[in-house]
Image (cartoon, rainbow, N blue to C red; front, side, top):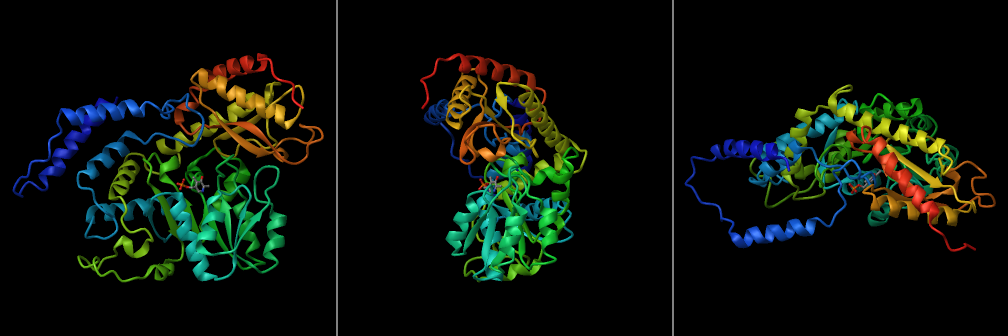
Length: 457
Ligand SMILES: *Cc1c(COP(=O)(O)O)cnc(C)c1O
């Protein structure tokens, strides 16, 4: 437990309370022994989780919020502001505007229209909704490695959706994309900078170049990868993709993924301020307290947690988005850990490394099996995953296309998928823990490979 966090929070809370001290006092409901026992029960129930904040948790995209985000969120909860309208949260709305401007500045956007959302799904929904308003009837195109949310959102919005194949590195296939663009039916291309499965980065620079020949809108889904624009250790092709962000029409980034925030914090930014017109609506109840912009006037969600904005704003003040700063170094550290883990995997005859090295901080690999079939390899991956968990190392599994591996990795199998081990090395500490991670992976692999297996047919 972080006593320092609770001390700082108590200090900040009494300062906040002073602001309302002229009011007649009303004692808050006190928490009795029953409350204590319920909290104890909740604590015990919560033990039923993987240890997400520990560096030996190296599985899914889960990163602990920074303590200042926790403290700021808890502080704001005592006010419980609602960033829908200025009536519900003046200070937190102002902080949201500043926090979103810091995101826009990080992406090199001189101006923007945007706001926080409950997460990447809703942020992408707003992006595709605006895209549909601007080009009714035109298709949304995204790669087969894009987040599944895009096809689902398109169906919610009644927009036609087309999936574009990805290449053997998980990036959108440019030739296939251009073929589709030539039909004139594509209104918007979703470009993923950091796919959820493997962290591959679509070549945004080359997609921007296609706008010379075809007219279409570009939406960048950087829910996972957006913050990597700050990192200094990207591959040149990845750097070029991030450097093209200023040409995008809209961008989504999730501060609750790599921005050290508790869940409930995504963001949508539009480059063209005039798309605000699509959000226009009257509200009979709100917007009376000020003629200034109420964030609900440019957001599809109504009530939103002002506490999210306060947490993000506070975290940005402590860890500003400056290249070379502490925040950026944290991202670089996870990426270095991924490069090193991938290097060890590629050098280990028990494992099969993919064709392409990691573009961000996500590593995946298959397991070599005597049968050299996807099914035998998949079964071994599953058993290493289980053995690793027994040694407190928590990895993830993913079914990935065979084409991500060198040809003839699985002789006689050219299409289909294989279950791979996958590790998202999002925590800055993962680099220092890499030997500990590797040691457990090694032991888990030795055990898994020694377990007698049923013959596979
Ligand atoms: C996580 C993710 C999403 C969905 O965002 P949520 O915050 O989970 O709603 C969308 N796109 C990408 C690329 C993601 O990684």
